[in-house]
Image (cartoon, rainbow, N blue to C red; front, side, top):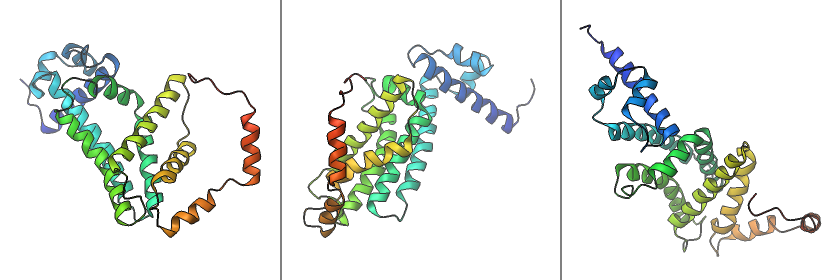
Length: 235
């Protein structure tokens, strides 16, 4: 039997993991099989079991690698020395990018992993919590700095933002259209900051409200748009 070098072993392991991710996304976890993964990887079923105990072990490593990647990106955005509003914008932008850059995998995660009965107590839940906790940490910092209303629950704000991003991304995906992140990010950010950014007694709050006041020209634009037929709710 030929000797397998450590480099070759790592290469085989990488090939199997990539094949597993592809099959999970295409077939769904329940329908995916070791034989299908082996076929895509170009190896035997038995070889897979030399590297992984079972299909669940493959799923765990696929998800661990995915979350490690997106957590690192979000942490870099959160580590910025930018002002609170800009940092929130960066986090929303990065979350959108993580979602859209791997839309098929995100669809698999939502439909197959997050909806599973054992998700709540699973290691995957902990990975997802580590990701969303980054956003909560930035919101906590905003409260401590007086940039965000202290009576708002950061977890609720996180859920609202992440839910909005998920909904917008799915809507565009179902339409078969691409999403302009640079266009959507400022809108989601503005909706978020208009509701949470400044404490009631913050002097910045009045300044921001003045900046956001509807000018006569904007009133005209709003009135004009109001006369147009409303889009279907299912669009």
